[in-house]
Image (tube, rainbow, N blue to C red; front, side, top):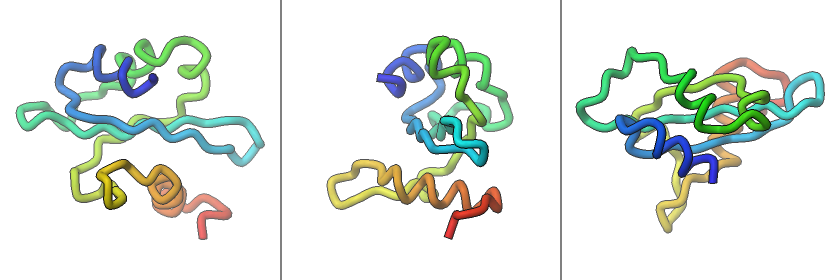
Length: 100
């Protein structure tokens, strides 16, 4: 449902994925991956709109909003985003412990 809310609030976002993980301190953190429409400005900061779309409970866990190109999104044979693999990739890119 979080993805649907983001898509309603951000008309220049073509698709999105919400990834929840456990932070270093044991709390839940949320990363949002955005796939933009062709005419969208990739430099625009959409964090405020994403935070508003998520609602207060999930917004409180928001760590970052990342715009990604289509070829950076890992999907399975049915086209669904492989959230576990995306979460691992984000952790590895951030140099987080336990990312391996």
